[in-house]
Every structure is written in C-alpha cells, then in structure tokens.
Length: 224
Image 1 (cartoon, rainbow, N blue to C red):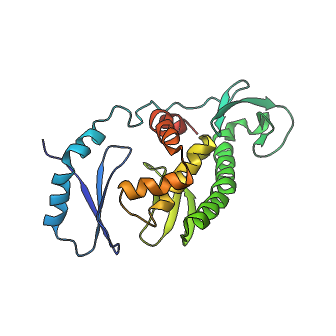
Image 2 (cartoon, rainbow, N blue to C red):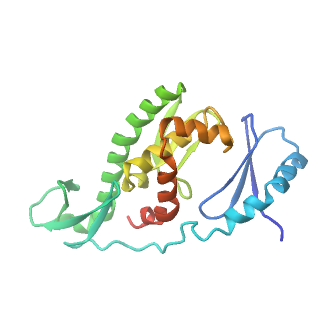
Image 3 (cartoon, one colour):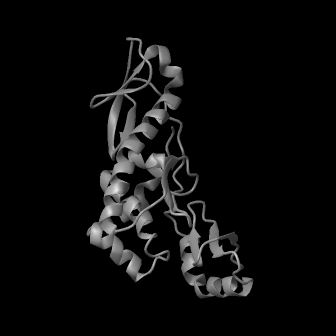
C-alpha cells in the first residue's frame, strides 16, 4: 500500500512530518531538500504513519448543528452550560453561569456565539502564551486565533503561533497543553524525547490533557 503525502517547502531549517486531523500526511521541508531525502524519511516513519492514519480516534465524531433554544447546552472551558432565550433586547451573547441570547437575535446566535468564543479565546490564550514563553525562554512574533481547519495549533518557521478558536471549549489544562506544545516547537521542531521532556517541565501531567484531546477533541468541532 502506497502512502500518499504532500510536501510544503519553506525557509525552515528542519524536515518534519505531521498527520493532520483529516488523516492527510504533510511533510514540511526546507526549500532545497532533495526529494530522495524526503522519501527516505517517509520510509523510516512508515509504520508510525500507518498507525496514525488508521487510528480510530482521529476525530470522526459527526458534526451536529446546534439548535439555539432554551435548555440547549453549550460547551465552554470543558463544561456544559445551559442556554436561555430571553425576551429582553440586547446584542451579542451574555454569560453568567449560563448563556443568554435575546429572542430578537436568536437567528444570529451561531455567529454571535462564535464571535463570543473568539473573544474569550484571545483573552485566555494570548496571556497564557506570554506566560509560558517567558518560562521556556522563547519568544514568538505574533499570535493568531483563527478558524484552523484540521489543527488545534501550529508554529510557523517565522515563529508565528496559530491557535484554533474552538480550543476555548476545552478544559484549561488542554488549552495550556496546546499552547506549551506549540511553544516547545520553538526549541525543538520534532516530536522527539527532548520535545516531550520540554513540555513536561511546564506541565507534569500533560499526558492527561493529551489524552483528553485524543478522546474528546471531536466535541470541540460541534457547531458553531
């Protein structure tokens, strides 16, 4: 069986392989990397790649459209909170141990909730990134909170951090794990023993967060 993969060339210094959440295999390589070297790495990692691609927990939960009616539950920081549709007119989403949306704006609730999630994601992720970057002794150029299609986070060769806004639905320990994971790539681009040891210095129980994301990551994909 042939293993299909895509190659992304850039001004990076190292050669890495990742398996995205849609099971596609991406090789990220320096601009002048010979194709023979890439194929050699693919062959060396073939067994590991097959295991990752065929894994049953690659977030295949069906994506359900959320119905915005009173009593609907909405996920935030790892907990489900009830939604209440109220008659009072106001814009946006309010939160006070439950979510509130005005009846006059309920048709816009998916967009309003997404905007609310993104705002909260920025308020949590950016300060935590600064905090852990300082502790790791690294620096980054910019943070983006965006609609990543198949990843929870990424670190570019130009030291830009990208995080999926849907992370704000996960428990804080999971958010911290993804942040530290991407910051650790500023020290070590590969997922080797040194990389995981770096994460462990900041998050001794990171395996619990990693397992949560593996088992429950699909929940974060539910609409909106």
